[in-house]
Length: 409
Image (tube, rainbow, N blue to C red; front, top):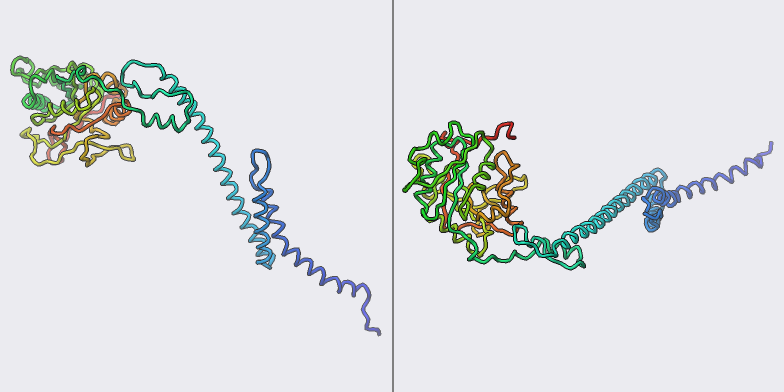
């Protein structure tokens, strides 16, 4: 029999190496073709509907590297998938950042328009007050950066003629609720350690005490007259809260300077002159002052010698405040319990917010209000006030100011 193969078998045998070679070549070229195709299809489009050609060319270059470096088809496909995910992720992230940047630019433009409108409204002179010169006058052609800089670094309000600022007499406000004998001890301590001709009045705000403070105070103190503190009582029939009590006392004050003290303190002699000296330093009525606060012995009602003194506070990230060891003059935040300001500044800044009906926070509000309205808060050097702190070992010191009743809240 003949050993020669059939023609069709010979043709198939000759084509099989060619087909195999073509398949291997196609497998090597697949990453070069597939990677740019995936990137072109799935990359984010621009606002004009066009795609980023540079990213497609980068994908083609990466596909070439994969084709040359990874001979096996399944490995090259994995490399293509991994590379495409990275490139598309970066592209979408960049698109998101561009979108946020456009929104920020649009917001800045809107802010510029609104700030410019506010500045234009301030171009006419206004009467002197707490918010005078809060926005500086400006031309209608200012950049956003200039406007923001002007708002942040506005010039200080014009100085008031020192001779026109009356700071001679004091109204001392004592917010008291269920303080008992502490209220009278505080009144007498203030009287004994204060120059009498400076003392216009001591306003005791009885914030719903039961029994009323008037019922437990001595007849001598209630009767008044020579040698007796000039005390008057403002009575709330129900507890309105510490802040409302302080506001009631501040609104009824008649002295040039309003002093807020807690109802369990004793000042050191000379405190009032140290207050006035500091308040008159700038020659206007916008300086609030705080003393150095030491510790009070609740049994003897005398200052504890050598006790550490706190002066000012600062705001923490959790919106609470704590004491700041700060030797300087300016106080970023006052403690709230012991301070003084002129009655004029009290009226111009609006006093305390009557919507704050619980306890605490008024010191933050008032500090920010004063600084932002052109005022300042300073430590009165030489002014010391002893304060009764809560002591777990002494039950008489643990009374907290009560929270208002539900109908007040």
